[in-house]
Image (cartoon, rainbow, N blue to C red):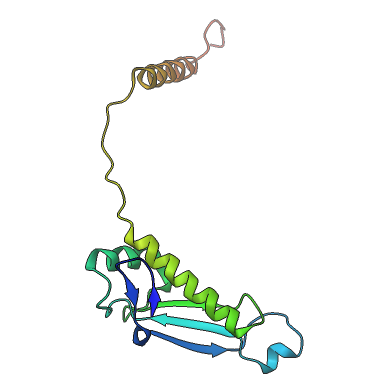
Length: 142
């Protein structure tokens, strides 16, 4: 059981882990030991997550969200399989915790007096620049 908040906890059957050999340098050990962890959380089928949290989780997960509604987290930070498992579980907990926070609604406000003045001053400056680009007179080229 992975506890996320006071209300939300993820059951063990919703999480599966597979271990593979890590990428990158690491000497002879990297070729023998499967230390990388791929944690899979069946988010879409989870009865413990309310629908709005699932929708926010899908958006936050991005590429880690699979076609069948699972969240994949791959960790190969350390050479220890146990530590990589802990890191993967912590990352999953952080991701779900972030999805539980509903974003605040933006309240539209009128532009301030100062921002209006700055905008109009900028438009006036730009107008002067463009007006100065006209043909140069005073020469008898014809």
